[in-house]
Amino acid sequence: MTRIRSIRPRTRSRALPAALTATALLSLTACGGGGAEGASSSSATALSLAVQAAPASFDPAQLNEGQATYIWSALYDTLLYTDNNGELKPNAAESWKYSDDGLALTIKLRKGMTFSSGAPVNAAAVKATLERTMSTPGPQQVPLASVKSVEAPDTNTVVIHLRQQDGALLTNLSMAAGVIADPATMAKKSSQLNPVGSGPYTLDKATVNGSSYVLKRRDDYWNAKAYPFKTLKFKVIVDPTAAYNALQAGQIDAGPAAPQYTAKLKSGGFSMTLVKATAVANLILADRTGSVLKPLGDARVRQAINMAFDRTKIVKQLLMGVGQPTVQIVNPKSAAHDSALEQTYPYDPAAAKKLLAEAGYPNGFSVTVPSFVFTKQLEPTVGQQLGDIGIKVKWTPVPPQNNLGAIASKKYPMFLFFDGLNTPARQMANNFGPIAVLNPFKTTDPQLTKLMTQAASQLDPASADAAYKPVNELLVKNAWDAPIAYLGNNWAVKKGIKYLGDGSNTNSTIRAFDVVG
Image 1 (tube, rainbow, N blue to C red):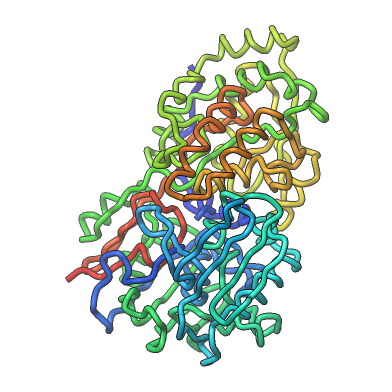
Image 2: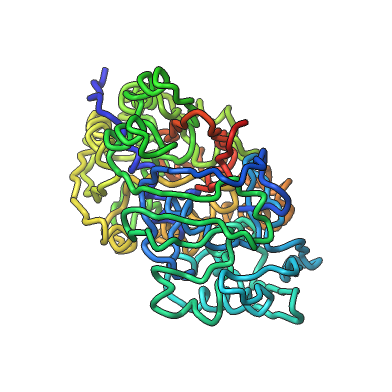
């Protein structure tokens, strides 16, 4: 039996990937027109929140997702938003409709919206923001890759023309790709630190970029009643012990709690909400044609890798129960998830060795894998369990600023990654699309392409998730990747505040918090 070294999970590991894939936490990582779910009528409350990552920039073309979304999504409106039940709802876009061929999306904007400067939020602003994001190198180009052109036929109408049907577009417009920025200022250097936004809050002068952020609610915002907190304060705290100490000292009202601190926080009067799936730890078997590492071109080798992992023990001992075992990358709350697939790859090193021998590798093989800061907690166990079936892993450290470059370089036929959960359409596009960051070898397959195209044609969000179930099944059975576990989060909130999330929406949104009483 493989021995697993118990270490404390670091919540930073679960937040960073979404920001990287924005691509992100993303994550996942969104909608509304009326009041927020359970919004309070209180207008004099404040919320202090610990987040694990600061926005790299407030430039709309450079927005990263993940926990930085808590901050920038309060400064910018998005066209749509995702509620706490995971459903797309109207936001700045009052309504939307696809053409019969699915190649044109017509959006009707709300009237009377303004930027924090007082300038009107209109179709020209939406068009200008989308076009700049599409033409500016950055993390939001890929989510808008299907867009051919944007027009604004009148003040409150935007028409988005597509190159092909895109089932992920509506979700993308509820995230960073769908923000609305002020055309007069969005390209200015000052907007990188202090933007003129369209959202419910503005940055206060007490903000220290990269460390702490103070936001004040706009009384003139069109939907101010959906945001019960008059003031938001965000403290960037990476270390779980520091976050615990800040909670105990009353410096913050809410934050993710490491498992070893949950009992103490409960006894101290904090309420705890455990969400077992906000991201997925996935060993991405990127070189599926074997162009760099020949063994990965054989499905039996990829299946053997899947059978090497004792996922249950990893979750219990390494993640201390904050997560759940999985062989799937889709959100377990989505209709694309199939619980029966979880039995596909039982932990069986002997069977894995047999598959490797059948594929022509009785003595295994060696592979070099990038070591990212956020994956270090899992690397010893992943390396050990692959070693147990004959696959010798050499980890090569990669500086954080080179993460995406290392993935895109094609030097690494496989890599461990933590990907924030999202809708199946976005999840599949991020991982297996022809220009996806997490598909550096641009792997294609006729059957997969057919299924992905069929699923993408389902433009109704209510039915789109289920359309990706056959895609998910094909990926699991052909072992395109080796998912290991869903990674969760345990939110601690003080008395008087409620956390509303249950994992249906894994985006980092301030709408997941409300006041009580």
